[in-house]
Image (cartoon, rainbow, N blue to C red; front, side, top):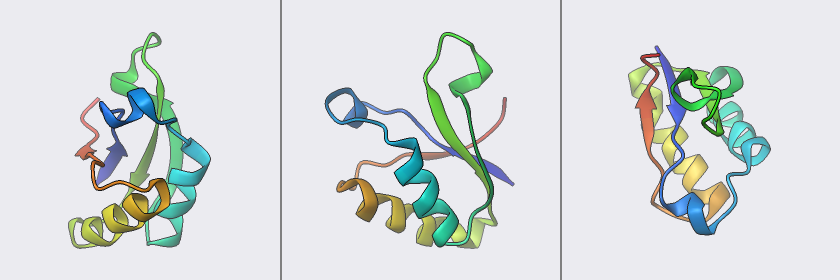
Length: 80
């Protein structure tokens, strides 16, 4: 299943560091890690997308939270 780390309100005051997030996703089991414009719209910011099983999501979320220093990380199914 494809997922993405959403641009959320946390990233209004903190930079969305795609390289750091991608590294955390990759090191915690995510595969096919890429960036894409959120929702596939050219006027939206780039987000990290990846493939993972639903059982890996908790580990991936924890790794991204540690990497960016907050618990306010939103990972959603990529449906676009």
